Image (cartoon, rainbow, N blue to C red):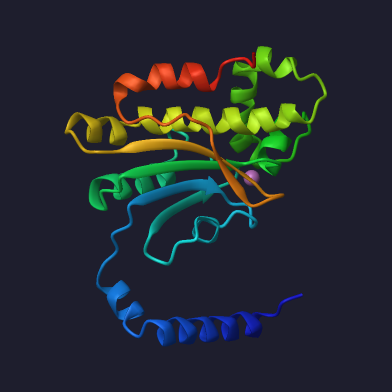
Length: 214
Ligand code: CO
């Protein structure tokens, strides 16, 4: 098991290494941030935004919570979206879920866990909404995969319906919202083809992304 002093030492070596490669890196970064991407992902330790995207500090603004939920009353998430869109003027919002998500799995079972049940209720709502499609999978493990995907699509939809994103589009700001899913087993991101670049695309993108398998 790693010890706390080891983490501090890791940090020292990392900062030194970065400075050796690019002496002005931290000074430049300290001036301002100008990320083009907002990442909304799961808190799962295996899905760190910067590392899976292969980008340096300063390139992606990040919000993570259990099961990458975007709830209309979550002022934490809404504040992040507002700052990213209105102040940083990011061009892309990426909602990235992952297969094998413990939060989604917990929501697909009927055990009671405590406080988190209230949070997972958002995903249980997704499950109920798409019950007819999910039932087709019976006990196939792909059922959980599909619920992880549907959860991303629903959260993309929620992002698009926030007053923040609606207002950005109204004032003509260029902003695309993407739905991705990450596979922990191979480290690969898959685009769920649920990208929305304006209010007119919301309904059709949602319809296609939540359609029953043919
Ligand atoms: Co997760």
